Image (cartoon, rainbow, N blue to C red):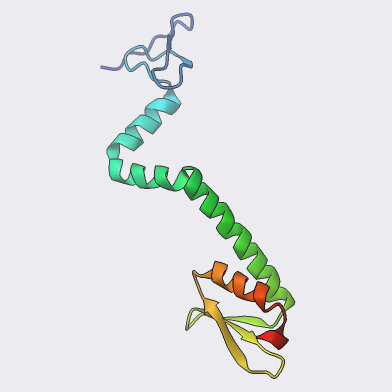
Length: 123
């Protein structure tokens, strides 16, 4: 049974974050209680989310943002079109031929290609 104490002087440290809490029954502050309940409701999903947000996952996410930003800049500056039907990036070379630069989801490969072939003349 949860007990709530109205006397602000009677607090206990939260068992997770050590912040003072009035909830002497659970010994959890509101924030930690909410997280504890949500995490324990679906541990498999929790593991996936934590794995994503660990240093490796966060680094990949930041790298993807950077690659997508660079690719967007290249699309704006050059003759690159996005074919949503085929899910690929198409470059228009100087002789107006279409060159497939890569497919959606492999933007890092496209960036490498464009570094090696920086102008439409080299596509």
